[in-house]
Image (tube, rainbow, N blue to C red; front, top):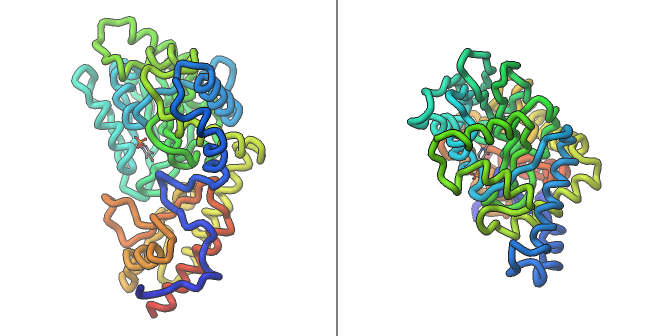
Length: 369
Ligand SMILES: *Cc1c(COP(=O)(O)O)cnc(C)c1O
């Protein structure tokens, strides 16, 4: 091993990846304590249905959902939700803000042959862009947090003409505070800030969104059963999914939500991610060799921190050295191709571990001379 980082500089937990991300040891213990009665049991019986009900209730509390909003879930993660939205949520045309990989993927899914070409508003990676009301657009979509670049964008309703505001909160949910009344659909998968495992999408839906789903489902548009949002709404109301869900994902999410609510909920979580990310942004801003990738402080994500390095430093070597010392997944998003480190500062991650990460990076930089 090239460089051995002294033990006293290392984080207690070395998982800083943006997804799958750190699952707290207490969640794993909680899962193991119910493992024999939960895992391997039918998802049509009370045990699993109560678990789904608990997750739905806790998400409703965490997001302070207004009356009439519902938590809907289905299998396939956020990627499946994009296709489901193309089939069952976009009536004619969407506007998609694209400032990174994930926003771009929804824009591609929304370019379906039965819809009009999406109005795509593209911005350079590391910057954000804003929605603009356009006649004929009935869904405005963007990520709350663009995980590939570390740019966060506000959740703010666009138009009052019945168009829906649809937010990809996959890495933001439970880590950035927001006003739920400003979105019609706030969807995510729980393997990022919510510290669970993948495979299931969740969405907080407004009455207007559910009305839209019902209307499109009643039209003559062909919708595959697996991607039917109407199907998902109906099943969610019974605390179940169309087909078998990942029970481990549900349980890890439920115990994480219990922990978050017990500590003070969304405002507590947001303060904690702001503290952790602030440590890294301050460090990079003061550094001679590093700088925050996102130039505008207002656009900087509190949950995914991207740090560019000077040409004199090879960020990939830093990430590799950290990995060899048990500090993993600080590499940048693979397609971004920058001389960069990307660090998750999700709610599960201890701010003190972020302090130790910075000490470890400083040590590696000093050793590299
Ligand atoms: C990870 C991620 C996705 C994809 O989630 P899957 O559950 O793997 O499909 C979508 N959007 C954002 C913002 C993400 O970070």
